[in-house]
Image (cartoon, rainbow, N blue to C red; front, side, top):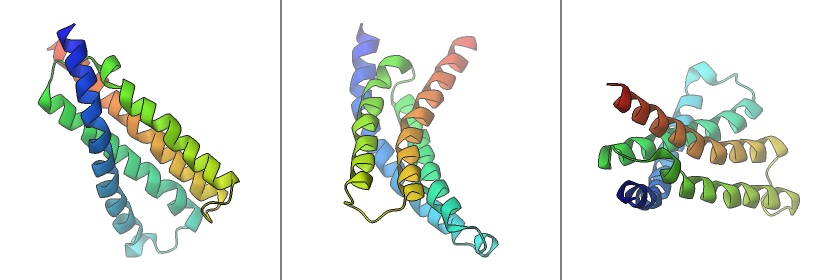
Length: 137
């Protein structure tokens, strides 16, 4: 029971860690796509790739931080809040697209939604993998 409570409380820490990691990942993605190698990459690839890279880095950083804080984490419980935040976040992007709130193309909106989904997905898989490695050693 103690592990589940601690894991749930850590999931509250995961959301700000995902935001920070996504911000840093966004900077990395923009720098990555801004290099001379990718000058001829179509805009729709950047619109899809940058948010997904950003979300993935955010999820990875959050998982890394949570596992460093408490390595006996219950990954199922620790994933509750990050997935709960992803649902309304994805909805906001969908709602904004269909209500012309932001002048984004369908590809850009889809990329943002995939980035929102990538963050908790990578976070979950990182924790799941680290916990399974810990139990096999």
